[in-house]
Length: 179
Picture 1 (cartoon, rainbow, N blue to C red):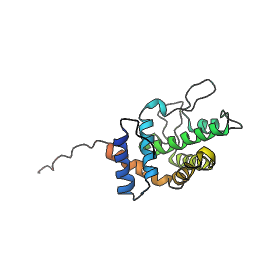
Picture 2 (cartoon, rainbow, N blue to C red):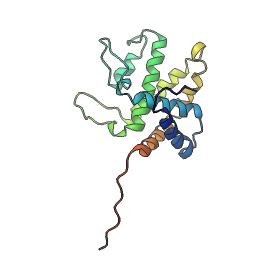
Picture 3 (cartoon, rainbow, N blue to C red):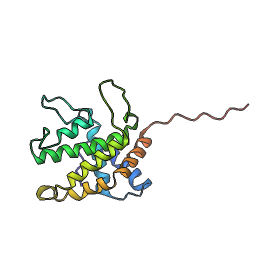
Picture 4 (cartoon, one colour):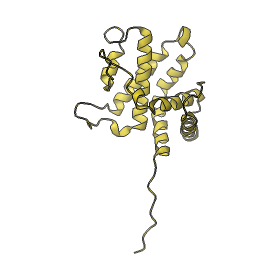
């Protein structure tokens, strides 16, 4: 279990637990804690684009993030760095798919292409699966969590969508008019 460091962590813990455990029946405290911690991390915008290019500029394109994570042909200097980048890419894919579905497949900015839901699912599952394969030494205990995140990726997206709905203010309903 991760220690609570961020002031929003109790809030996100409850919101994720309500959706994952209460609405989806996804009773996995490690997944719930991980996703709540991820929401805290991404509540600070600069954390969403941690992957950097050779010049130190944030990479905003999913495909470029994937290329950067390749330890042979990309900018990842080691397999440990590949793991860290893949973990971030999995988190990014889960976050965008669950919390910002309106960004998928759009071209809001002319020079940026936003991935489709199927792109995010494919890349997210693959990235978490790769992280789960780092199952030795200091990563041994975390590996099963990432295997479950990969296996349950679509349910985790749905759970985040439910969190988003819970957090989105609703317009007050007007009373019916009498004709």
